[in-house]
Image (cartoon, rainbow, N blue to C red; front, side):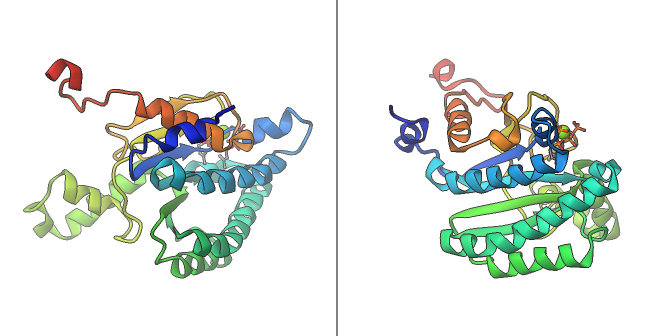
Length: 248
Ligand code: IPE
Ligand code: IPE
Ligand code: MG
């Protein structure tokens, strides 16, 4: 049987930006009689599979929602476990990233992270800075509304920026740095059947295509990503204009 991964190879749309709300870890675990944290642990394996699948699917930027600013509301045992997993992931991913040309960067607030998490993030970012094949952005303590507010504050601190303010320059202000900046999102995927943004990339998703799947994140694999990208490639993005067929 020809896999959807192979199907897509002949129809590459280069350098897509795919963003994923990796949801359903807790429900995946509870439905198996396991603690929620087990779902997060298995979810980390799904991250590895997804990152590996990206280059052959034409994905040049992958932004993963790993921890929202609202996730601090969870019980501290779960928050601590998530932070520990993020630290382990950062450390373990360096070797793989160097081998596969992956550049890791992290978006979100850094001032509330522990020094050991921060240290793991900065080490991974520094070590992988020359990766050319895939820009892997991980959103940690991330809130899109906060990111937009921060950009507005930066603007008010430096009013000369008003002169050159446009959508492009505001996009730059929203990025934490040139290092973490990325093009607008092409395809937004959310797993677990939920159909909401949960404060993820509000500005960058202005014309994103949305793909919702009932798959729980720990079960997500390369074929799921290929199905989503295939589905995206078959859509007619009009950006307010007319479809290619109607315009001709
Ligand atoms: C996503 O899975 C991971 C994080 C939000 C950190 P959840 O933990 O939200 O899983 P559900 O939605 O409770 O099943
Ligand atoms: C969004 O999922 C955040 C991440 C996947 C990291 P949540 O599970 O926290 O979102 P809500 O609360 O269901 O909207
Ligand atoms: Mg959830």
